[in-house]
Image (cartoon, rainbow, N blue to C red):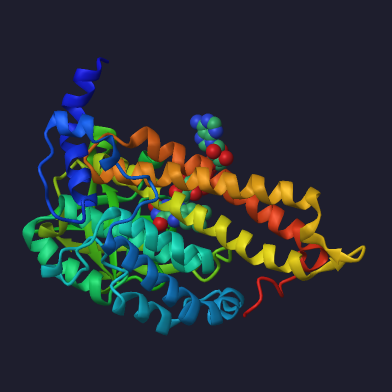
Length: 391
Ligand SMILES: Cc1cc2nc3c(=O)[nH]c(=O)nc-3n(C[C@H](O)[C@H](O)[C@H](O)COP(=O)(O)OP(=O)(O)OC[C@H]3O[C@@H](n4cnc5c(N)ncnc54)[C@H](O)[C@@H]3O)c2cc1C
């Protein structure tokens, strides 16, 4: 690809970003000016004023409101109602949703920052927020009719939890092998089947359900329906998980659930396409959750090693330990840059599919390694349930 072609295809996004970072005042940059002023391109870590403000707010919320309840929620495997209310009150459950629908009207990167900051303190609360923003709200915003957006986005921004119902007992990696069916009956559809592993579904009141209306058409029969709890959704089983235990993951039953035809999200038969597209964006959210988790583990373990003395000095002062801190800190930074880059590409309207997958893959590996190292650095207490303790 030539540089000229590259510029032609990327310039609108470059110009938008340059304008955003020039103090939020839209300024026009010509192609030549952009080339001469390479310095107008900020680092990936540079945030707009709004993004920095959101990050500050969510950091305080996580430290002051969530942290004291992390251990209790994890042990009870339940999401504290006050924390959930707080997420809505702070505007964290409708970050990109337009203000006319009760949302914060902010950017995708802001959503990513919120997910990351929450995960530093509690990855379970982070995933609650992540699914609501990057999957549920985005599906409504991208594909919902005016009527559906008007009806559901305000509810999702201000008090109702939503969930994304794709996986089933025999449809995991092979998601489009789903067996849940939707049959047209006059002016409504009737949904029959079961969904499994559905995040937030214990608390949810709004369910985005993928069901097939025509199995002969294979994946092209898959359609997305907006289903309210009151239509007859039943929570069959809540999983007891190894981690993110405060976040609910349930099996759901749909036994002859009647859904009005206006509650088809987007077009009939396009559900598979919407699911693929939304999961591309969702990967960046999970990457953010992972970098938050990794940073949180690092931030908890390091101070302990600076007070824990062995052989007459803090273990954290031995160079053998410090080499490891440097490696993990570098890994986390690299994962963060991949994640922010993917988020910015998406926000700028560029192709981001490969970068989102890379961000999720690498961030998950870093999270696993960082968490494992954090346990190791703390010796025996790292293997107890006392740590991370409540400060
Ligand atoms: C905590 C949690 C929350 C979740 N939340 C949601 C949600 O909100 N909504 C939703 O719809 N789903 C959700 N899921 C489901 C998730 O998307 C599935 O777990 C995932 O798609 C994998 O499916 P599976 O668990 O059935 O694993 P399987 O598909 O059975 O895979 C088992 C193993 O086989 C490997 N494998 C599969 N196919 C291949 C292949 N072709 N080649 C090589 N290896 C392969 C997999 O990588 C994996 O290691 C959640 C899952 C978890 C654990």
